[in-house]
Image 1: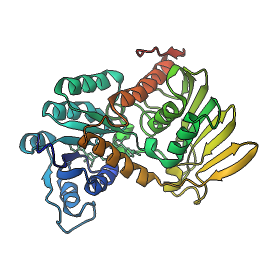
Image 2 (image 1 turned 45 degrees about the horizontal axis):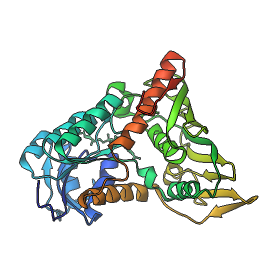
Image 3 (image 1 turned 180 degrees about the vertical axis):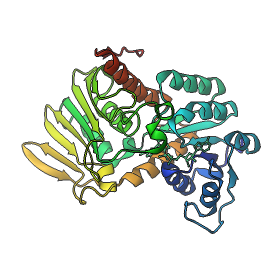
Image 4 (image 1 turned 30 degrees about the vertical axis):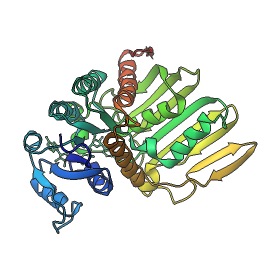
Length: 349
Ligand SMILES: NC(=O)c1ccc[n+]([C@@H]2O[C@H](COP(=O)([O-])OP(=O)(O)OC[C@H]3O[C@@H](n4cnc5c(N)ncnc54)[C@H](O)[C@@H]3O)[C@@H](O)[C@H]2O)c1
């Protein structure tokens, strides 16, 4: 480990779509210093190390470039490894980083199953390092505001929660290989709806699923029974016409109704700009003024998690929170495969 009083020395693995957002966020984070990047694509890694973007040219940052993550771990004195890789690599790279004495920040989902999450959590516990998971929509301001309203009791008791993700046009590449992704749409973009449901509704006790082909699914409906007695539905599908991207959250509570009209949908350009959070309180609808953007939520997630670790605090989204989301996804797959409801106990499945 490097100077405990200095910024966190970060190595970033994976410079693809989300890695580019992490790259900028780490460089903007006052508590962190990006000292190394690693990607199989050397050209991409070199351009990213240059000016902080995949299209850049000028070299203005003293960032080392690697194509082998193990070599980066062996040669650099890192405090934290940020993992923006295909899902099957989250476990082995996290374990190598932890073994090297590093904290880890993992992109969603934390890993492809709860067993892998447990291995990461246990290894980190033994080494005395922290695990954080970038559930960026946990930091998306309309979701934060909605959670605050629920926690303050302003909406009354949540009764029914709904999260939907309708996409036209399937994600390609490694995501089509269940061996690399751990499943289909649910474990990929669907995980944002899962942790948002947990954030708003609390712990889940039962999961019942309808799914077209479990673990390589293009469409699913997951029904949740919350410990509170509320119920929830997460619906996702790739089946829309090209160009559709519609994600939204709705909460029906004893004292009101709330809708978040898209997080990624605004970013993807499929919704004209407009109110993000609408509330029906005291018998009238109103647009809440809170505003935010998807990419800002990613930057905030990285900044807040790195800053917490740098200052010795537990990150707001830790390994347990990452595991909780994976546990619901795993239960959803099991339910789809068996045709039965899967019950989750206090201590897990
Ligand atoms: N928070 C979000 O909204 C969001 C959005 C997209 C992706 N993600 C998550 O980010 C992670 C990465 O997804 P992505 O879309 O950026 O993927 P991507 O395919 O765009 O990028 C992955 C990068 O990893 C590199 N890579 C693969 N194997 C490697 C290895 N062994 N060593 C070094 N580099 C290697 C590839 O060359 C590629 O550049 C996944 O966990 C995904 O679910 C999150």
